[in-house]
Image (cartoon, rainbow, N blue to C red):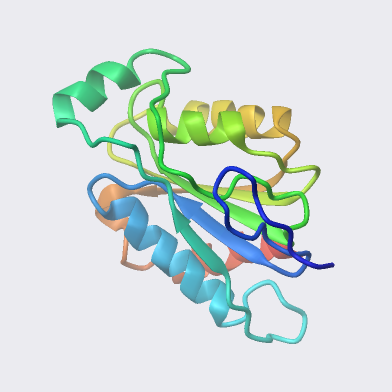
Length: 182
């Protein structure tokens, strides 16, 4: 299936064979985990033949960065969102989407806005998040429910404590990718 141009971003929407890794990261921990997920996909995780795949990678960027305290205050408001720069949000023809986010308190406003815009149409989704505190399971369930309301087929979640990002998670990341891509 041919890619179509997205009216909002002006970029081509992912085609039926495309795997997309989309993430937001403020401190770099989620960006590192996104890179690890991307590397696992590129090395063939989730393919029967072990074949290599080149995912499309997109970062969710707020239109303006804020101080830590501003982000913290906003994250205490469920459903809080902020303006984000244009990013791909039409995933109806994608093979799979991997969405990464930090777990703050009750929301991550840039990711909340992304989820509000996203269209999945049954596309398989893997949700990965980094966290430093507690209640990450509830947060992941809540975000997965939001994605499912947008039409996503959430197949797997990967929760990684921020201190563990980049160390000894290769097997977990590979299994996570396989669950989404199988």
